[in-house]
Image (cartoon, rainbow, N blue to C red; front, side, top):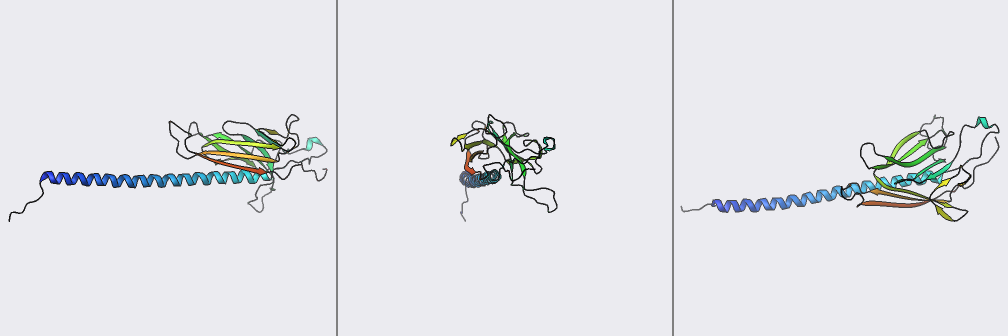
Length: 231
């Protein structure tokens, strides 16, 4: 009949040990959850960057210039160009390409398009620059304006373009096929593209700590302006 239970002191010690074990288990699971979320975010950012690079590469590969103009200069309705300019943190390139995809059977468009790539400030987040794509499936006299603008990659740190001049065998930071002081009527042989994206979670003290760097080189097969016939 002289059975003894736990004293209050022993019960407090047991509760304390149980609380410590619970805290350790919760911390381990929370750490695993953060690691999982970090890996998912990193995979999403890599995928976003790769898709952006694939699209830029595909459309640059189909870039062209055309000498097809009517004899009457007042009847000219479109102008082709390849213009690359420097920018911080993103360069800009405007060009004509045969990469347009007709998604509607009865649409009155061809495979020609005007394309631009450049950096744009995020209107909702200060200090964040996105890589955007401007496209128009109806080329006109202003190859750097008009059409629709869409975001291609968010939160970039760098979008750098370099152009290989086949006459000098050197890369240059700019290109202009429309002026006599640039590269009149010529396309670059290669375009080297560098895209750097933030890992996806910027810190206040170091916004560039985690970066995703993607690099590729695109060859432009159409070197000379198209001139199949005189109109």
